[in-house]
Length: 422
Ligand code: GLY
Image (cartoon, rainbow, N blue to C red; front, side):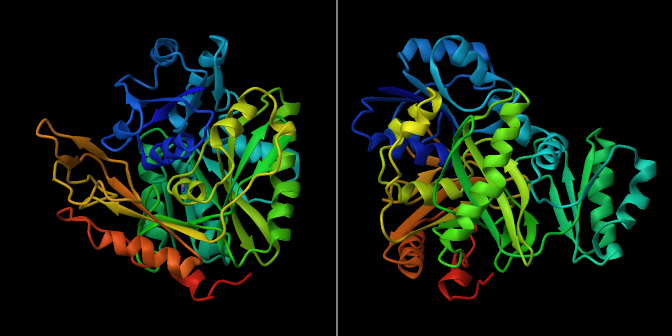
């Protein structure tokens, strides 16, 4: 099977490495990729938001399966075009991808499916902003205001703050640039990312993971696309995972089928485990980054067969998934100033080390690997338990040099020390 992976992050690097372990996969291509993925797959610099370009590339490389990593091509309908060309595609249709592309659509689906989520209100008129802010956050007895861009914002459209001026300024700047704002009630409790391979009403959960969205240790500083993750979650009982599947993901998948927007691909449920049980923070229509880097490090089941089964309507016939024992941790190395405008173009030392996945990297003509984006590398460590996995990841980080870069030192630490409870 020849697989074409679309995307350029560490998530796609992890997907490629897991696909390479599948004995049925005998060819790998990637577009546009990065300096690390070029060592794993044939790399093509095409515009992955163009359906025509992706279909042409899939035909050119003889792809049997196209796996679309990022949300933007999915929301634009690239998966529909690949399927229309008669090529199997892992990734939802444009219609189904609205579960991530429009938070208002996601809320409507969750309401209809009876799924618990934060109370919310869309504000599209600046004149209504102050009154709406009064109905949320500390003004309404909650810990903080949660202000989101209604559309796609690469994780950076969310501000969670107990400072009304900060919340208001973010909302006002979104409205100024013509983006409707979603105000949400604050959900208290540890967060869980549960990735489910979904094909219509068939739902196969992967290991639960937790990601770290704030830039600084102890959840300080602004939100990012994700600074690290670990899996599995020793503090989350298996019964809780089962109830997330049966009470949250299956009803949402069934509601999408009922609406004629059947989901095929990876449905990512982001939840808070509140004192009243799980409540949805967000749905995404693709593998999460950086959780994928940790989750796939533990997957024993061949990934190509699993994704092809979902893409071809055979997921229900798949045997149960197999996982390696132990834990995995991924730590993101970010460029100076990220999540602001990142410093780029610096030579990276250690980019070729075992366990290092590439994201914002490119190769110079002289062969050296340089930084080319905000999140530059994902360093993955595995071990018999979370403490060992953390030690493995941070040992590799000791050997990486990138001027001005930064990473969090506390990925998975609270869980390793038994400090998370529900
Ligand atoms: N880990 C957050 C995301 O993938 O959106």
